[in-house]
Length: 442
Image 1 (cartoon, rainbow, N blue to C red):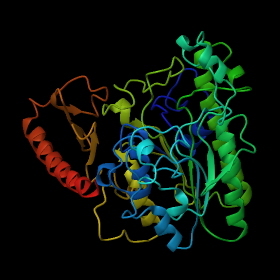
Image 2 (image 1 turned 135 degrees about the horizontal axis):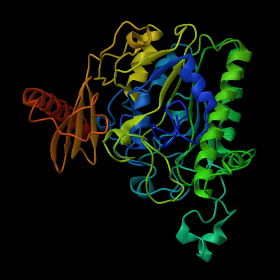
Image 3 (image 1 turned 30 degrees about the horizontal axis):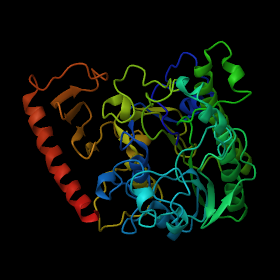
């Protein structure tokens, strides 16, 4: 999973400058989901959806550094560990604090005020091997402050003086255990340097593995390094940084695929890829991510805020390239993986995701269960079917034909009043159910 990579930030989706040869190859060889969605318009909630198969508002992760992966939730690592899988998590965590000590990380909100309440490291959620940060780090030299990024910072002596000092977020491998060795250069490479040995060890032991690899790229601070910046020497400096860090990430995806092939496990490994939300568009001139023709950015429930790159390579099951146009979402990972392993979903809770195997196998073209989204303390909501997207914001309710109008330029609620009424009722019923669960958590 990338962090803040827009739907248009790949070569296979037609970016005019960005080089992503390995993601492009995945698209040519596997499944390309043209309407893949993050469960939320920002980081932490989406990440929680991957681990639970449930909408983030059901268990209280409604914003970045707000809520945690509660002990009452059943994470996918627990289910797979019980099935004999070795589990590992590498890169960004963002589902709770990694230390009970206030001030150890770049925290804010509830994480800063009550870090012990939100202490939820992966090693307490059935993750065997961890190499994780609590939140963001620079995309180059991740433990060091990059110095001035924004234009207005260039002449600020306080910001200039920070360059090369500790950034404030650390890589944890266990309780009270942090690592500084081999953390220079490209952050995506630093992460993959830990993920690959975990995979090698489990394959050597003859065990199946579940590896979660969550890159920080291209979240701020956006910093590109050589040789990747030189690949974009014809572009302005701020674009060089953004494109360079994504191409560096892409290189690590290629490295991972090569290693799976070398180990002889690539054919029967499901390799998924997506982003946690749409591109950022604030705070730094280096944020030049694009959602292409889609409206909106990160934090928005417009398509550009929640539609993201979505790929799957699985040679044993997907023997020829396939395009899936049906809407799919990060909450689908949990039930899809369990379905592939013939493991039943736990019966004591509601799941928002569905198994994508019928789409992957080409047996189904339309999603049977709509996708619901909540945003901005549930003041905004979406109910999405195959064709229609019902949207509620503080400005009012609208309906879009998302197939004919993916840029959401025309409200068609008046000419499709019965559809709008039906989706409105379904959305309100679902929203009430989800918020009732949220109230129980809070």
